[in-house]
Length: 229
Length: 229
DNA sequence: GACGATTTAGACAAGAGTGTCTAATTTTGT
DNA sequence: ACAAAATTAGACACTCTTGTCTAAATCGTC
Image 1: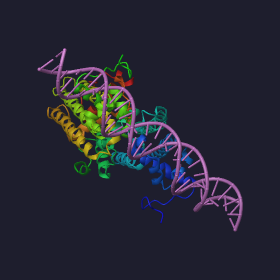
Image 2 (image 1 turned 180 degrees about the horizontal axis):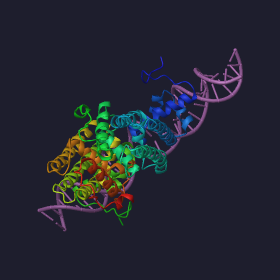
Image 3 (image 1 turned 90 degrees about the vertical axis):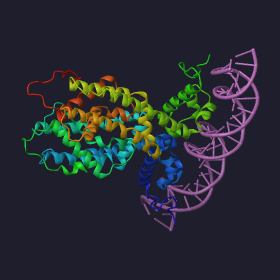
Image 4 (image 1 turned 90 degrees about the horizontal axis):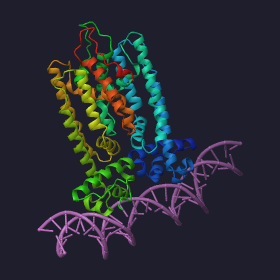
């Protein structure tokens, strides 16, 4: 008799569960409607909670917004570092390993719910809360990019790549691997898995043409199939 | 005695001038505040026009928003095609010429006022008005990307590059050239000129490492200075 | 200089949203 | 089972915004 808002909403049990549920619902609503358009009543309804509870937990709309951004940043960072830990330090098949890494990074950190929401909040509210997003910039790209750069530096040191500046190479790796997803990202969409794989494959191939050890002529790789989908 | 809103606002003269002024002001306010947060009174004030005039010209808020997106898309497209016309078809110094092209594209089409605003409106409202931005996608990337790809195809045909798929290469070119500007774009900022030049330089170098004819060993280019700034 | 069209300032009704308050109910820990 | 804490529904004042309306002022044009 309860789920009068949406079939799959059960009132969350416990104080902390409610807090979580509110932040999650708020993230969705802020993204869809923007800060000004977000409606506290709607957030409460989507969280399966009364409006007063929202105010009890978070004070007011602006504090709630801050809490959302902090939570998302934290979760996304955790995901990114977990994925960086899977970077291929001793690659068997360098191309395949880097493609796998790129796909994992995209699917687990950038295209998932949290990543999508955080990106959108940054895009829409970056100018309104400069301090808040300066913090994000330090905690996010400021920490993850160097971490990725360090992994590329190690690959170069191990003789698998020829890189001048690992920081530049890391940024270019990300740029290449997402090159075909830009429009979808801009519109707030979620690319299909095959699009992610496609973009990663093409990106890594080009990356290796620029930075890879050249294979002896004639030893051409044989996974060209994917590229023509 | 007029400029009571901002020193540099003179009431625009003439019907069409007012329309223009309203759309421009609206673009700025919609970007800063989002659709819901945008205030018609504020738009009118920034346009140097009375509120009633805004309604006379555009009907209501939603129609005004549509007009803004259409105007921006049109202007940006014009700029992009004008810049594509300067693509180096018969390059003297390929690296320098491509860097120049990339910088022009960024400065005149992507980092300027219109480009910045359009990008932000797409990001924030892409999901709310799917039909409107489907139109943008066709008219924008749908027409400009193939045009750029065609230019790269010609360079390849002329023997200046080695490219499998010109469409992929074009997207990767843009990804590389903007690789170092992503964070700034996300936050809605405008990169400084030297950042644009830096990113373009690094991007084009990598692009040519991947797709360029290899120079005979020993004939190394000598503009490495910029890359270490 | 005069006429018609446009623009302006201001008032206005209607609606929506925020944040507070209260009294009743439910949950949690013991 | 009991007491304390948390949650709920609903009403409420207050503010802000949209879109309309009117009468006066201004502009462009002949």
